[in-house]
Length: 70
Length: 293
Image (cartoon, rainbow over all chains, first blue to last red; front, side, top):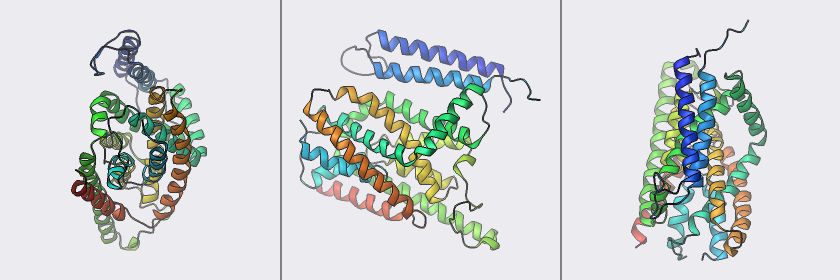
């Protein structure tokens, strides 16, 4: 698969967004995307977004242009 | 609070139905009222108990494919660091990630409304009938594909289903796009009555896998998502609750029964098809709709 710098950068940006979301759900009491009658810390959402951030970085590593192997 | 007897019954049921394409969650919701076991579906311990049982069955799958999982995990880290896929194990690892993410994200976003749906036996009964239809449709598609191949390739009139038969696809040969579609289908199994193993096996058959290979793919795909769901829900059970202690014992029962079920199913699918499971799901769903009020 040929690398693509814009795709790789986009995936890094996505990873940053997921990381911010993870920190948000770990630290802020909310019902956003989580439901519930009262705002609360949603650690499960935080963990999942953290995993998505890591996976996005891995995907960016796949997408980045690589030097030709001799 | 759920009784120990009910939890152990659900454990045995879980062990059998988790890997068979008949919806373990659908059975857990439909069968107890059919046989006269009454419990509060809104019991806060209901979903976490089922989740702990899932951990038992996930443990069985990890043990069943322990050598594969070692290669898959090593392959994942190698592929992740290098940023490329160099061998079939690395490819399979990336495929499992691609196939798991859709169901994981959908499950997370819809977990609250799905928790409400989990406890409705009549809804689960209706989805069991749909599950039967999915299995039957996949087999009809497979039979039509096999007839088409036997006509176009007279030298291969009989498909032997043998391991390595070149007329069938292998898991590692599936495209990432196909794997993504299978993963999206797996998200549909979050509905009670729709079988995760059934829907992924059906997708595997449509993609050209042998029955046994489709089951292997289904079991490999199921393992990370069942593990993740279980690990995330265990804290909700409470370490000082009697229900938690019984549930852990039940998880062991579910694991042992699931291992035996998986071995049986893999042997059966060397020559068998999914039709009996389709008829069974339709019949159980119909019984639930008629008898549960």
